[in-house]
Amino acid sequence: MKAVAFTYQAPGSLADALARLGAGTEVAKTMGGGQSLGPMLNLRLTRPDAVVDVSRLPELREVTVTPDYVRLGACVTHAQIEDGVFGPLRATMLQAVAGGIAYRAIRNRGTVGGSLAHADPAADWVVTMTALGARIEIVSAAATRVVPMDAFMIGAYTTVLEEGELIAAVRVPPASAETRWGYQKLCRKTGEFAEASCAAYFDASRRFARIVLGALDGPPVVLRELTRAVAAQGADALTTQAVDEAIARAAPDKDAIDRKLCRTVVTRCVMQMLN
Image (cartoon, rainbow, N blue to C red; front, top):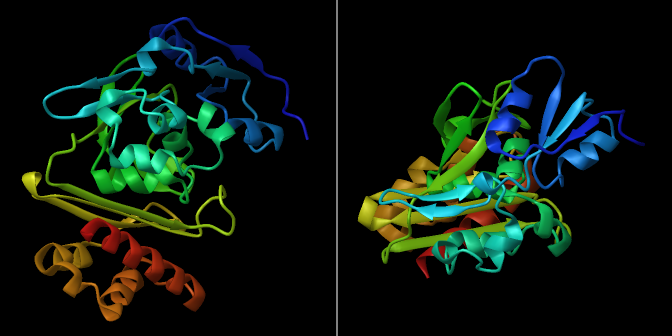
């Protein structure tokens, strides 16, 4: 299939892009790398009047460091993170996760903000940013707001983004010497979306700990009881019963096969973090 007819717009600045998105005279879709939007257009799952390409806007392609967080522009690509283009992201959980997203051709074009806005439950950044406790910087022509990742994704392919808004950046905590993390996913074939995924992020310096189960029917779920147990007892808390109980609370509708996949990724993820 081919997309319905639409106008392609390439604004020269973020302010120009927001003005176009907020004009209200036509249905407009924001495009970053186009790795999610492109197929949706061709399958006619979305039929906008205009596509506003923000991928080249310099305001969305920077990585900066503040005392409280590292700010990733929404149009930073997976490949840039994988390749260590930005010093603050080298040898971090983000660099490791980026290198395992889909295929290199996808990583060359796909963006962090685009992946989060698409909100596929099986996407790598969705579960990773939840584990990190990231915050999403959302802008419109009228205002800027910052939403915790926990509250950003409200369902499969559904976020709190409103008409005229786009993701400007993602704010993640800076890594410390005490940061420990793990990330595991199971795919039918390398490069495909995950059948099950888990991200763990512990930082004793901030007294922050999370084990998050992803690739569910909706947003990722923080395994709070298991997180507290692992933080207190380490590997001793990672019993089959404890993991199964955590999965049952997070995803009660999973069948036996899916529960086994979830158990595998959670166990591997937490052991990776602890070792």
